[in-house]
Structures are given as C-alpha cells and as structure tokens.
Length: 60
Image (cartoon, rainbow, N blue to C red; front, top):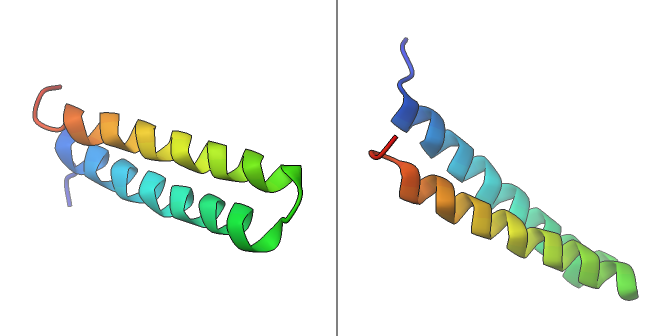
C-alpha cells in the first residue's frame, strides 16, 4: 500500500477538519468562560490550515 503526497495531504486535511470540529465543540459546549473562546479560536485556526492543505493537493 503506497501513499503518495496527495493521499497524505488528504488524510492531513481530514484529521485537521476533525480536530477543528472537536475544538470548536469543546469551546461551545464544555467551557462557558474565556477558555471556550480560546478553544474556538484554535479550532478555526485548524480549519484555516486544513484549507491550505487541501489547496496544496496536486500542486506539491
């Protein structure tokens, strides 16, 4: 089973989106104070990085 660079970027994108959703959910449902805003901000950052990974597929 060989994984080329596009497959690796696809898996990285999927994992980053999953972690972003988990962090936003933690910020929204678990923490009601200022820490929730931090979790949500980091989750949005994960979305931004996964967007870059998705844009790099086929170009690297």
